[in-house]
Image (tube, rainbow, N blue to C red; front, top):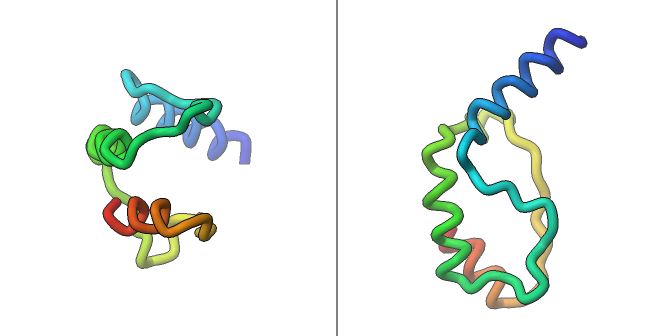
Length: 73
């Protein structure tokens, strides 16, 4: 398990090299265009087999504006 964890960390570090990593949410948030730009930047990181169940996540409904931005993403 330690070897898997080490390899995973190495892969993540390689993929994120040169990327801005946000450790806190910005006080004033991002505009929809800023969110779209962040998504475009992250597309180069590669793809994952989400249909095969290899990605975990959750969806939270906050308001219509956020839902719209998420759908556009």
